[in-house]
Image (cartoon, rainbow, N blue to C red; front, top):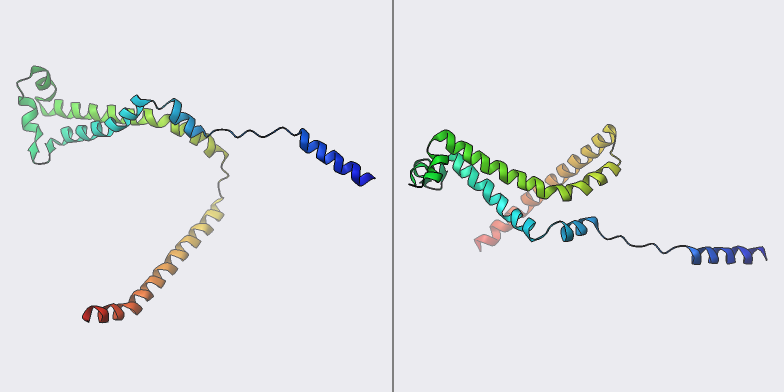
Length: 164
């Protein structure tokens, strides 16, 4: 009789337990809400901006010497930013800075949940890290030895096949 009552209690407890709701992925929420079309456009344009800034600072774009051409465009606004080496380097550095800030701005919503998750990680001790590192290197040395032996063993076969 006691067994029946215990089983009945377990069945009642299981029926009364609330259903666990599956939470949507935080990353997907960020991508859907915070990364609108404009942010995707910025993600495409910012590397181009950084690259152009690097070209301006270097003064070369392929075989074109930008240092000579940028300050002689006959457009006063453009010439103001590029007519001396210092102005050219400052203008290029500004382009690099703006592009980098845009990349950081776009990365913050993705990195914020990552930092929260990293705080939950239990990091290995120094001894455990050293042991695991040793195991990885030992395994890599083993693989190197195996493939070296395969190479020595199969090299005559390949030479013979190529000579036919």
